Length: 184
Image 1 (cartoon, rainbow, N blue to C red):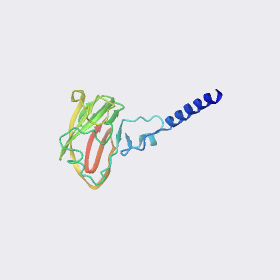
Image 2 (cartoon, rainbow, N blue to C red):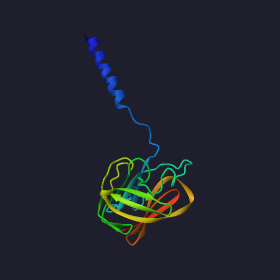
Image 3 (cartoon, helix red, strand yellow):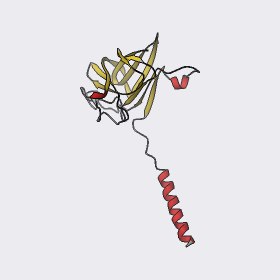
């Protein structure tokens, strides 16, 4: 009887350990975060506060046609890969000329060849743009595209503080860039 009980306990233990050590492999499009001010979490000084941050995934170009290819023109795109970009304003800001209250939003774009429509939406925590609900849009505005001289292999977001409570949020991938003006 002791052997039977020990055998059962051993099997339960092995099953528990094998289940507990099960992890997914690394994502092909890793998560990243961009802060305003740039590199805030790393360079933070006592008493400083962030203005904004964006969580996003970084897909690679990988020799593909990006805009007008894997990211079609004229359709809502989640900006990057995996979950929609999560944009957090730590205080009220003006983004693309539109007032945005402090809070957390999902961020999308409708890419065009020469301009993008940028969308901030109140619905959070879903994968892609498949469940995008236009009725939950908080603000929309357009920004012009520019061409990067160099190929940007991984989708990237970066904030640049311009001083005098003004900044720009840059997004780029392949040879396409957009800049979103921010004031706070």
